[in-house]
Amino acid sequence: MASHDARRVDASDGHAVVVGASIAGLLAGRVLADTFAEVTVLDRDPLPDERIVRRGVPQANHVHALLEPGRVILEDLFPGYGDELREAGGLVIDGSTQLDLYQQGDFLADAEKRLPFYCASRPLFEQITRRRVAGHERITLRGECHVTDYVADGGGAGDSRDGVRVTGVEIAADAGETTLDADLVVDATGRTSRTPDWLRRHGYRAPETETVGVDLAYSTVAVERRPSEAQGYLIVPSPPVTRGGTAVPVEGDRWIVTVFGRHGDHPPGDSEGLKAFAASLPTPEIRDLLEERSWVTDEVRQYPFPASKRRYYEDLGRFPDGLLVTGDAIASFNPIYGQGMSVAALDALALHHALAGGRGDLGPRFFELASETLDVVWQMTVGSDFAYSQTDGEKPRGTDLRNRYLSWVVDAAHADSYVAERFVRVLRLEESPSALLRPGVLWRVAAAAIGR
Ligand SMILES: Cc1cc2nc3c(=O)[nH]c(=O)nc-3n(C[C@H](O)[C@H](O)[C@H](O)COP(=O)(O)OP(=O)(O)OC[C@H]3O[C@@H](n4cnc5c(N)ncnc54)[C@H](O)[C@@H]3O)c2cc1C
Image (cartoon, rainbow, N blue to C red):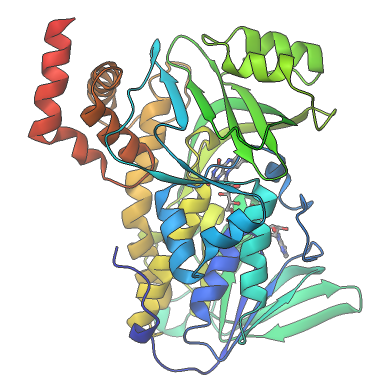
């Protein structure tokens, strides 16, 4: 998708309201401010200018990797984002030589080129993004505003010409219930979005929802890091092994260390159990961090993630005017692949391009554009998950064949820098999976397979 270019979006009238001030809502708010005179981003949580784990985003306790599209779009929307991250103690490391990726029995070779990778806690990513959005002259951020309903005109059943138009939101705030008028409402409320129910209640079809069960759980702590240390680790399990882990250097001279297990192999919530779980991983790096470094947090934070979920809004023939849905509210992915924030950023970019085409029929045009990326990411995620026979859901056609080829790619990437770089760039959502089928990769993968 082409980069953000504010000159492609003209006009500056109307009021847009975004419900949810997490990553997807903040980024949607920023691109809406190119064309709406006024944008209000609401959240039911307080929104202080602090680095906090908000109640509405409990996943913020856990490792959050920012993949390449997220990094690039954040830099485009907020120039100097990386500098600000570094000033706050975040790191920009080489996502190859400084991020050791273990998969299928060995570490991957270093890539030939440098792959910039921002390392920060999720609260820091959110704080910088929130601060930049709050500083925009057309955007107002409002915390402690629980949106209870959309306000709508017209419609019910019938075709799109006499359908419903969303004209605002109902808010339960401290001061009592109020209404906020809007020309456009964007639902960025995450996985638990209630838009599908609302559509049903107003005579529309709800989107088909696909779930792919992985029965995953995370356990996370932070440990001390010497300022000179900037190495990250990612241990990816391959069937039949169900457990893995990661450690990412972040601000505050800490590593955030997360271990995870899928298909019911959940890591424990006590410190000794956590260390024992880490000791069962195939390489010692994460175990050593947990054993040898002081823990900055004494509480082990846990997070269960039962299933990836995708709602196919692009397949709805009719959709109310004045309403959009973005981020996890459309699709939320198995978090071990680190895609959610980057997909939210790609959704914002799709919204920017949809707005460049005017405001008419915005919903269907936006969903169609967003689905182009979602299709690719969804297939990567659930494809990898279906390498496990325990994964629950509809396996996309061709998955077994793709997974067999991918396992050859990984084997070749243990020793071949060129293949390793292509593979890592695909994981980072920087190149399409088809990059792994280019002749230069194919013959190296075949040569490695023959040589074994
Ligand atoms: C354990 C875990 C680890 C993850 N790791 C990564 C990772 O490594 N990399 C990555 O990119 N992504 C990761 N993700 C995904 C990432 O957290 C999300 O994709 C990202 O936050 C974008 O989500 P969102 O903004 O759409 O929704 P959310 O982050 O869920 O935010 C929804 C917001 O809406 C607000 N809200 C909800 N209802 C209302 C209402 N009625 N009124 C007002 N406000 C409301 C909430 O308070 C919240 O602020 C992970 C997720 C989990 C669960």
